[in-house]
Image 1: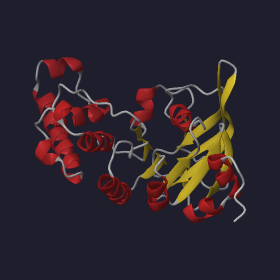
Image 2 (image 1 turned 120 degrees about the horizontal axis):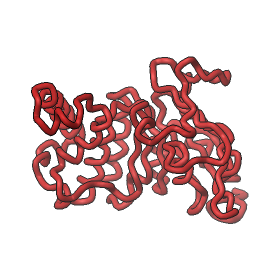
Image 3 (image 1 turned 180 degrees about the vertical axis):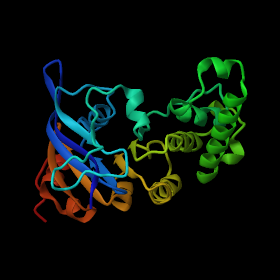
Length: 272
């Protein structure tokens, strides 16, 4: 199987503290990949380096946005891009999008308008033509509104499209944010603790939603999550890190049996 993302030797320090230390892993095409570790392990820092919210001190983040993928032999492919140094808006244009630990919405706007924000980087009409409401701009906006409604329908919240986003319960806001990622026609979606604040029923629905997104849109999913039930249920492979360093990689079953993972989480060896 080929890869859509390959992180190679990622390192970054803050004030002399090494948050990531020569970290490497890869995410396969259409794979749900989990990144786990104790609090302070550097998981969100990994996400921020991949999406270029942070500029790493060393390493590369190879991403294949087109049909060609990174192969397991280490070749990067003709269309592979090292994201390090790329502006954030261009990373999104390549088809790599993310959600955040804290849901990022504009509460005064409608649910639909919040989803439309996810497609703004692809608008072809100029700002002037949009301001003047020229025919081409109106046509493009109508197409994106239809696309946004389809994303909301896919996530079963289309009936809330015209309601104010700030008045929605937390579970709906989470779905709204995921709908927004779909506007960018993603090749890879990064989910930062998507189950945070959800109850057990909503978490079960989230697992189904992640699988449906992967299957429907043919994209990969990179997941950071503290809910180990969700991680073990939905991920194909999992990478465990501790203090910014690689710890273990394998299937959920392999990770559950790994002594190093038990030690990192529990602080002691599990001899059973």
